[in-house]
Image (cartoon, rainbow, N blue to C red; front, side, top):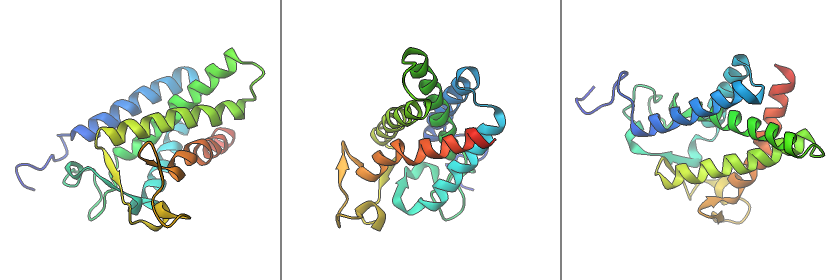
Length: 177
């Protein structure tokens, strides 16, 4: 390990940002969102799985490459994957708040809306902070248009995923764990 490598005791700025999000979301989820520790672990594992499966869709900030927490020859960072816990905790808490203020809103609709809002806001923030960039040559980011189509610099499929895939997965986790 070179002298400039972060090593196990020194986190990169990207890792600190994601851990802050994780702590905020986990706190909100545990305090108000009805997320238990076991569910947070399942969210982390689901997020890590998602990071592994979609690894080729984006390129993380090069500062995390030499990190102790980055898997060799990949952009998959074990701490960055914890950001999914933060997104889930904040989204589930917001869904509960929406349900408190709008009792006619179906809980599942609140979950879909909150994930769409929270997930897209955090995605846009992390993109602006340089946490990652999208690989414009990736087939799935170009599908079905033959080129990457973005909404405020984020691919349309990623934006849509926060309003469909993430709340659907969360609903299954919360119902089954």
